[in-house]
Image (cartoon, rainbow, N blue to C red; front, top):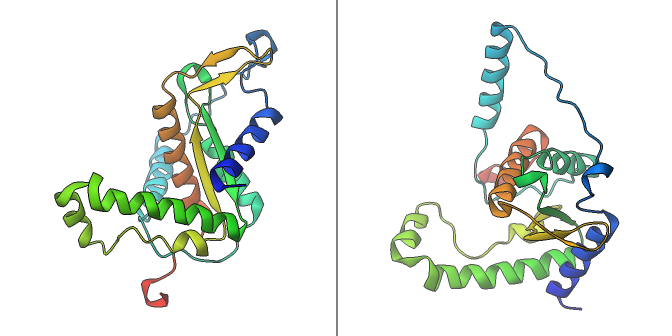
Length: 197
């Protein structure tokens, strides 16, 4: 089975486990609950959150340190709290740990990235990337303990099999990815110091 077929199979299997969009009468309403903090506490919390996220960097040297599956589950659950058009939640997260599957993903990504560098991105973009010492080789896709693949769903299916629309699916998935990155910053050891390369 090819990697694309395998990924498609995984996504379909996940979709069958969940009914992506129940009819409104079957969806439990969860009332909004808000804690209002005093101004001093709000300022402190916002500063701490900023300082945490300000440490985030786009790294290309990924630690091979194992991450507990519970942590991965929690960051995916956090990403799943993202707002979405008509609350359709048009995303599927797939966790890949199998080394052979990760390597197949790497080959596909590198093939596409090489085309990006050679044709799609243009001279200026490629030149701007030179100072970051990056290229289409993505060896960290093999060494990372897990890969989290994120798929957008352009539509879904109700419990009765009827096709449903996922509004603003690309924007919604992008927001979920941003929350995923923020959640990963809280705990996950993504990078290793450059001197360890």
